[in-house]
Image (cartoon, rainbow, N blue to C red; front, side):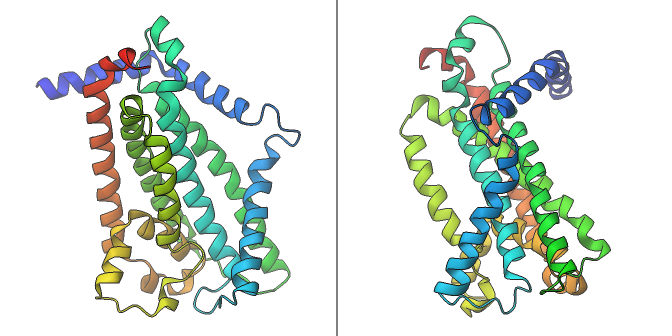
Length: 281
């Protein structure tokens, strides 16, 4: 009964401040492109330019083979878009409490609103940036240059996107708490994200590494929830005709479990320490 009452109280509190959350999300999006000449167009242009650079470097200069990945440009673009959302949203959530310190000291607002608004605003720009993926798939199909044969299974993309959102929110809430008390966390997390980028199969196909499926190295790769999330998205878009071979249900449930665990831990740590924030910001 106590849990039900607490959940009801949190729900009522969220509904009370939902309009503030909406305004914060809108403000975050506007501030992101406030001094930019191209504005929201950068949401489309930035991932496209970055992908083209990475394709040129890894597919041409380093001789990275695209065998086994179908269309390497789309393969790389998917990994880049999803990883950028995770990286950007968690970093912005991490800084949200400290950057809104003056507001927190003056006006009462549920403090979780600040990291939540950062993750939500980044999620919206991420959804907009997916338009570049649609355009690129259309380009390759129209020009018949290594086309992507989309199937109805493309709707399964929703699953990894939702898992990624939950994971990012949970990690963001945890980082927002830790960074208040331990300010070096921002620098440490920058290094960790860089390491995570290279151990996540974004610019390379893990099958090309010729690692045995049951080896310790492969198990380490699969411990990273982003491995399953990005793999599921690619399976739905690139390998729809061989979907059952590339969509791993075990990885899906593992990634979902990691996301829920991160969310529970993130909110638990946040709520336990939020009353101490005002002493450190």
